[in-house]
Length: 210
Image (cartoon, rainbow, N blue to C red; front, side, top):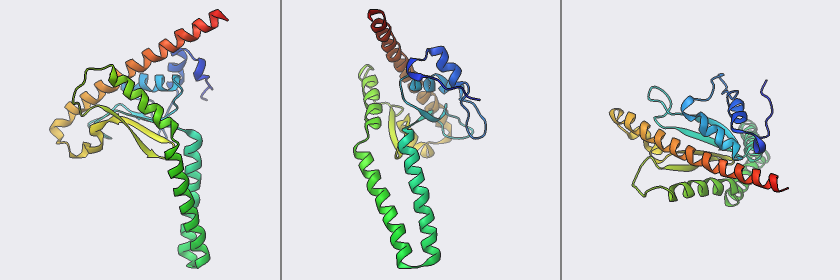
């Protein structure tokens, strides 16, 4: 049984112990190459949902981490399932009333999703983190530069820029791109860990003063 953890006040070791218990639906644990990234995101208050260190034999040749706004994601998923159910009912009944119910539910969900996107503070926080990281790096034209992509309302993926076109990369080049993407993610992870450490030092100072 996974023990609850207070991420805001957890130590690095406590965070590592918690992430060691994370598994996917097949029971697989967090990839070693993305483990510290997952730990530091959660310690900084970003809840992770899925991750991968990147692979050549399966999945994509790039590392990625999904961050989730649990409340928004769950609400969107519940509403989307309801829309799908109404769609099936409308197709079966073939009446104006059932189609009105389905189309209104779909319209309302799209309206709400657009509003969420306009008010997306979590997306902005992730963008700001990446901007601050790259502001501290030498400027270079690197297709492995990390980006934040909205997957659906409440779900965001941090991955190298080339990940959007990974299928177009020739197989003999993929190992090189995988290594470059992993290097970027590890560098970003070191930056995030340092930010977390600075925050911890500040919190310790505040506690001592009080």
